[in-house]
Length: 128
Image (tube, rainbow, N blue to C red; front, side, top):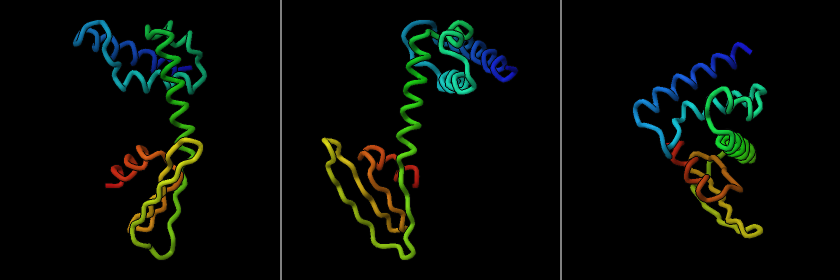
C-alpha cells in the first residue's frame, strides 16, 4: 500500500499545480496523472477509491482504465517475424469482416501483419 499512497500523493500535487497553472474547466488531463491513475488500478485500487482519494472524477477514472485495457489487448495481437533472407518491401491490404488490415514486409525483413492501417503507420514511424 506504500506505493499507492505515494502515487496518490503525486497525483494530488500534480493536479494542484496543473489547476494553478491552467485553471479549472474542461482541459485535457496531464499524461502524468493519467499514467499514475492507471497504475493505481493496476495495483488493485477500485475506481471509486481512486476517484475519492485523487479528486479525479469517477467517470474519468473508469474511462482511462477502459481505454488503457483496450489498448493493451490490441497491442498483444501484434505479430512480428524476421525471415532469414530479407525480401524487398511489400504491402498487402485485405478486408476482414468490414475491417481493413494491412500486412507489411520491410526491407529489413520485418513482417507486420493483421493490423489496422493507422497502427501500421505508427509502428513504421516508431521504427524511424
